[in-house]
Amino acid sequence: MMMNQDSLALIKQSIKTIPDYPTPGIMFRDVTSLLENADAYKATIAILVAHYQSKGFTKVVGTEARGFLFGAPLALELGVGFVPVRKPGKLPRETISQTYELEYGKDTLEIHTDAINANDKVLVIDDLLATGGTIEATVKLIRQLGGEVSHAAFVISLPEIGGEKRLQGMGIKVLSLCEFDGE
Ligand SMILES: O=P(O)(O)OC[C@H]1O[C@H](OP(=O)(O)OP(=O)(O)O)[C@H](O)[C@@H]1O
Ligand SMILES: Nc1ncnc2[nH]cnc12
Image (cartoon, rainbow, N blue to C red; front, top):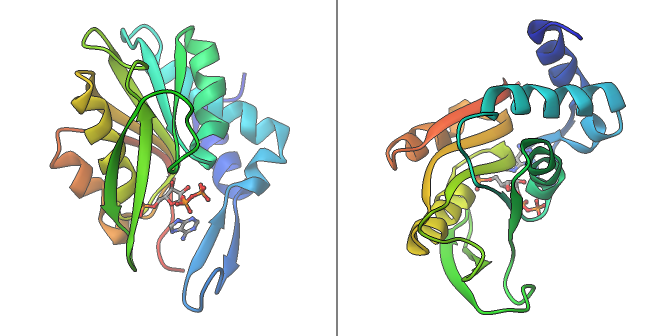
């Protein structure tokens, strides 16, 4: 088993940066290059499992689309159910919605109303934390259904954008496996 520091270095190194994608000035941190590297992907899930196992979580919630890639294997390893939060019109049963601000304009996320209940202790996961808008909306959906949520995990955090402070302000403890600044 690799040491944690080696794993964290492997994870960070496996993430490619694409300048000026999708728009000029954005440094895009591409998690697909991590997924292509079996050792890095395995190390990512192993670190998350070690951190969150035996903490009493009853569900893992992941946000469309890239949150599914980490949330589903983590839920399997923790032995709990996985609940997807999706973009509008994708979930077939009764849902509730939450609209949130993007850098330009608004977007909406939905969750099945029967997927979370008042006995659930929920771990939220996504690939990347930028403004925190996606996860703020996700946390509101879970809390609206009576679920307890106080932890969110990310593979990548962009601390300059301020999402961590925003989530901390909602009572969420944040774990991120690697950080990137503007370079
Ligand atoms: O912290 P925030 O400012 O909310 O940004 C982070 C979110 O943005 C990206 O998803 P995107 O909305 O591009 O959707 P996708 O995963 O379906 O590509 C990323 O995967 C996070 O979910
Ligand atoms: N810089 C970035 N790289 C990848 N995904 C993002 N989502 C928001 N900002 C991003």
